[in-house]
Amino acid sequence: MRVKLRIWRQSGPTDTKAGLRDYTVETDEHMSFLETLDVLNADLIRKGESPVAFDHDCREGICGACSLVIDGVPHGPRAATTTCQIHMREFRDQAVITVEPWRAKAFPVIKDLTVDRSAFDRIIAAGGYVSVRTGAAPDANAIPIGKRTAERAFDFAACIGCGACVAACPNASAMLFVGAKVAQLALLPQGQVERGSRATRMVAQMDAQGFGGCSNHGECEAVCPKSISLDAIAMLNVETMRAALERA
Image (tube, rainbow, N blue to C red; front, side, top):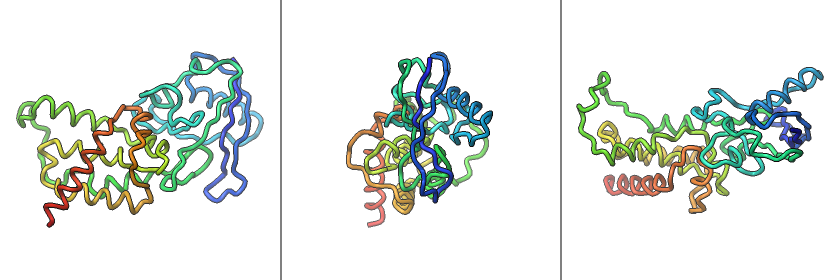
């Protein structure tokens, strides 16, 4: 099959001539989207042109590095799926596909489709951890945790921090990401020691990084490759209010 890719090209953060460029690629319906970009880059290198820069790592839907907006949708047309798991059979022959980077002030473009997502790292450093000594890994049944609680914590822990929620939100809010990290630890015994300040510190850092606020559009949940629900944002709001009451 043959497709036309309209790809955002930007040589660097200060490139004033950045824009979409058209490329025609011969691909196969069984190829992944990233493999199609590999084919394009191999052709560009043969022609002596600069290949398209894009993030990728595991290519197994685990790491979330493959951060692309495909036809206006972060990670592409299939729900609960990362870009690397999108295959060309999702598109018709002769399709025109627009590929852009994450669009958010807090995720500045480094080059082409690659953005700097270190803002998430700084949010985690502000409180998304357990600093007390927990010792070696305990036996599975050493700390009693109810099945429903454990399952909820695991659902929130599934967040891979890809940033699709930010890219989809009209406010570029990181509330779903922060909520998932806060909720995960709030539900577990190990997270109770710093529970009172965790949400406050992480939300403050989120605001400092330039992310917007949540206005309940729900776009974040719709594009999350791990199907993190809006319950994470509700829990973040609860934890923030709880911390405020504890300080009062």
